Image (cartoon, rainbow, N blue to C red; front, side, top):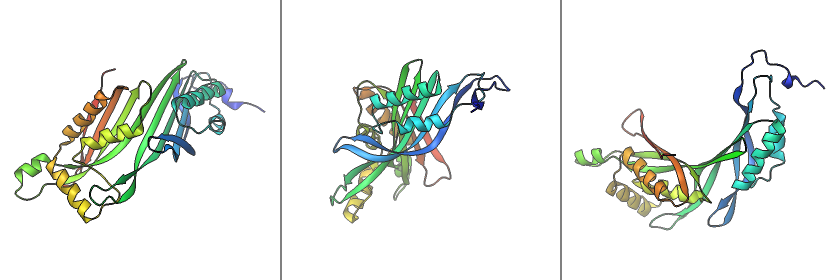
Length: 256
């Protein structure tokens, strides 16, 4: 049958990335406590396209996933990207997995147990045989405004914030490491299940540790900088302000 994708493009212009997104796939990720965790990822796959080709072969992305093991680690990720490059006859390939990662957490006073979910991601780019691998986690926390606490006779405004961590590293890094660094930077970590005594503890702990969005991003960046395996990071904190109709944010990116 005629291969229309290989026809000459009407406009001879190279495309940086072309591919598929929104695919869902069961995967296996490493879990520090139980060894492995089964979850479901939303997947994006892309390649570059030379100027002379009209289109790429979209079905080959899905074929690559069908032949992939489903175990999300550095070696299998490299294998998937190598396969995409070969199947699509590309110079570079890009893959992103976004998935919920679950931790069972005990409430601070009652010890009640509940699952917390964190949006995590793995991004990879293979170009000219070199792999760039980025691991990330979005970590929700609670913050209390230091200014509001200082000027108010009673109370202070508090809100949820999200610590978005992206890292590159040598060796291996647990997702739990990134989550813990993010949680330690806020006024208080979050829990899925709280009894009354837990709610009292969380509230008092948060008000005893007021943090600006600037404090949170610095605290997270410091934790990432001190991690022995991490050699690059970017951390963004967004505070969903409770007394404003806008968010506050701050970003720190390490030097290359």
